[in-house]
Length: 403
Image 1 (cartoon, rainbow, N blue to C red):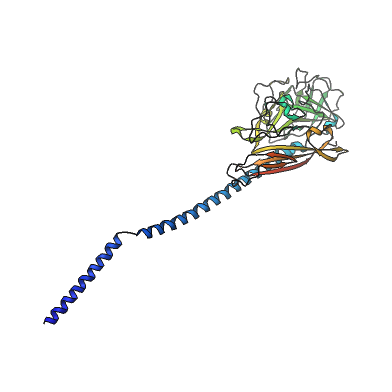
Image 2: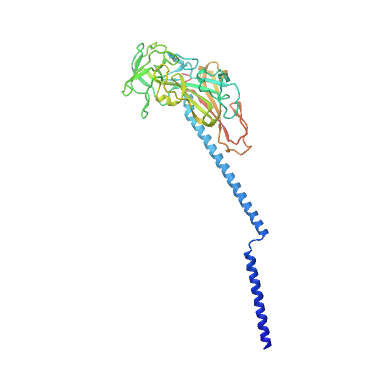
């Protein structure tokens, strides 16, 4: 009996101890992690976070670089689409060329000057800084920049080119009635083919050509814009851009061609937000204006314009432009020279244009971007920023240089 009681007591004590141990384990688990465990967990979390951040930063850099490269590729395409056709077509005047073109327009040294397909101005100072303010002196180019740019100055350090030729988007049309001293002529149809709805406007530059000779003049007014026969007046006026006389000398036969001409300038200037950009401007109404003015024309043929339109940027992100001209004889380019070394613009047969393009900030790793860029033999200095950059060079033959 005593043995049974003793055994029962031992078993009860054993169960009590086990219950006490189980309660201790539960209490220990309810107290959380130890300090060592917490430090290990934090260390692992930091390693994982660092890896995620590293991957994110790398992916963001890759994305920024890819975006900048795409942006600069778009800039190259825009330059090729807008600048290249104008330069290639320089000197076209109907079935004739500028070498056989007379001019009855009151012209300046550059404005309305159709003695050569193009004219250039070489920057004689280095680029003063990225996205620098526009120049205040025409003497920063050789030859000196034409005074017509006084209200639309480019940035110093970049070249300027002015080309003359057929107005883009137009076609030569036949002349159905012309009397040399009457001050008017009639063309068969609009030089703007459908689907264009543009029309001939006062202040536009026209030319008549019989393939042996051409005459450039300013359109004073027009009538019958909605008919098949458009009457164009080339009356005498006053001031630069107007006609010195109303008559053509010599006369042109019926069947001669009428074509619309333009002078277009390309240069780098500070655009909206202080960003450098490639600008394009057309000469109309006696001043450099945006392409939009072609839709409205001038208020009359004397070079006046009631609503001038300032030139607008064509291609953003262009830091600098340098130009070399291929000169020679007999239509053969013999050497490449800057505008300052060209003595006869009628002997320029090709143009080589170099552009320093830039991407947005952060598109290149810090410290990885060069600060000196060679652009057609000219070293262009830029600050040590994080912009991805690229030099784009295009060589263009002037199709009408040998006509």
